[in-house]
Image (cartoon, rainbow, N blue to C red; front, side, top):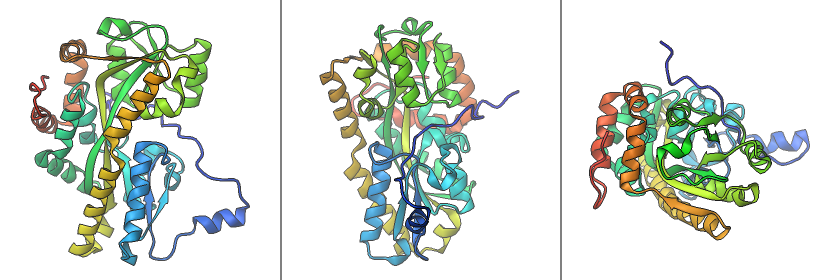
Length: 348
């Protein structure tokens, strides 16, 4: 049986460099002898990239020369291929990284727990999951087996659904919808289970396809949609449906972690926590949703009953992925999500 966690494509992030002579470019890229190389797949215009940028700044500000870090955005240490970022960290091309749990789940299936459809359909549930010590410990163990030490984990937010002519309120609304989606298998299988037609393409290509009518919608983080000026591309509706969540993973290659003193490890944890707080992913998401609304996009907030209907519509798909992620990991995730303030238990 084919393993469902095999990558079908890779993210397309675009270039992050500047035009310069070959000599100058090589000089700019050359790190100092003791400088840590910090990898992230996107630039600081997006939440993940901003958190990585702030972490690198805070590490430099500590004054500990062993922890001074230089930021390498755009997965530049992994050949501009976000699917190889975790491998680059394990192999030593990068020393530290801020990764997407969803992307890294290709190599560490347990990290896909946040993306199991509707396991954490709102911000409170996602925060409860990332704050869960039992879940963190289990994920740290899985990463450790891959040669990576987990420093911190925090909510990145939900991938929502922007559409052109049709508002999404119920599972039936996705039938036949052509949707540009993350090229990761769990997302594609979810959309297929709902009757949609997922398309793997770059974000810029998707904007052009939307404008021409060749595409009906885009599945993405609201911050990415706001940055791309989605209304200009013809998107008129945004469903905050809470289907697929993601988390930021702050990590260090294990051999380096083992060399560090307890005080240096504490600095890494403390600065990561500060970078998470200052980046404030939830506030950035809410600001992006407001911006989209102000630009004329109608926002639909799916209710708890709506979440239940969507979850039921993909029950078979969720059962398969529960096994792929690990039943023990999913059980921990469900227990954590059910502790969200004032909310009912998350149901499988």
